[in-house]
Length: 156
Image (cartoon, rainbow, N blue to C red; front, side):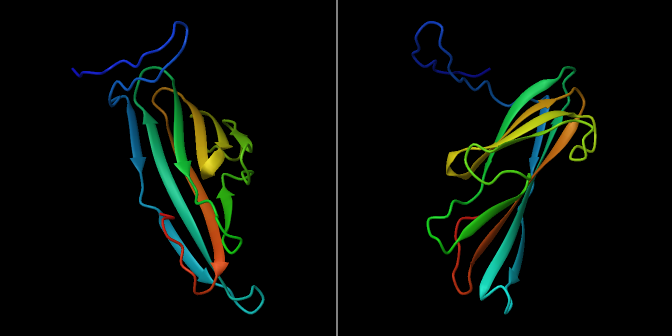
């Protein structure tokens, strides 16, 4: 049993209230995988780094659940740094949104449905409908490119 303070709110409005960990949902967020490469004479003197982030979510409940999962990619503050989202495909700017439908080539199992949207400040939002007893792996791949000799901080 826990204690919570309810925020003041007007009638017919909504607010968020954490009720703690739900044992019917299992989440595993893996350590990011980092792969660095250097450019050659055709690409100029640049360095490219691909980051892969994976998150497994399981639903052990006896009913389907709806979930929102947030992650984030770096946002460039300079022209020297380019950030490209490789997976999920179709996300390049704020407001871009793509769907994954069960049974499509992007979904390997019938686990539910997913919509992925790129929000402001590089946030990536997955909206999931996860069927009972199913699990899904969410993958975020992004590439950073910058001139050789420069360092990026805070990307993983």
